[in-house]
Length: 220
Image (cartoon, rainbow, N blue to C red; front, side):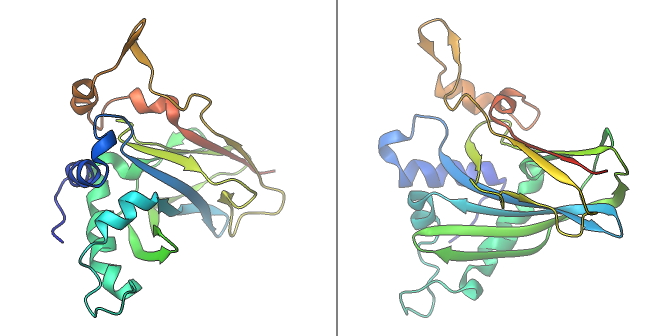
């Protein structure tokens, strides 16, 4: 299956075909997310994401990928989709913002992209390394995961493993905040925001920030 670039156009076409009854509603794709703030030598080295897509989108986007016809989708059959889709995420900064000790962090190209089917849901995992490891010290690391256009709805998984800290110093703690408002705001009283308005949003938009998932990591 060809993968359009940028990613958002591909997702839009996919969702519209997969979900014709709700093609005019936002969001179009739902993701349950887990994250690891990876530490190396006491410094923040990157973010490892694991994103599980909704069943309808998963079914559509994997059509035609069972190349050996065994009725199963192997990681090998999904690798091309994983690699190209992960690379295309760069347009939207990987839906990820990270500050360490108050400073915005820049990311290098993603690595270790993998996809797998878990039941009826497609899961994407990848490592998003920092361009330079960041010293956190006694400051905080603040992670946000969201789509600025709210085309994709991210929800951090429930449970203690929603945000993990492999390699962190002893005593580091995580506080997770999920968005309280799960529905798009209205443009005017009594009027829903139109699909055209959503289509005009770009990666520079801040509309989706109200739906951001946040994790604050504090270390002693």
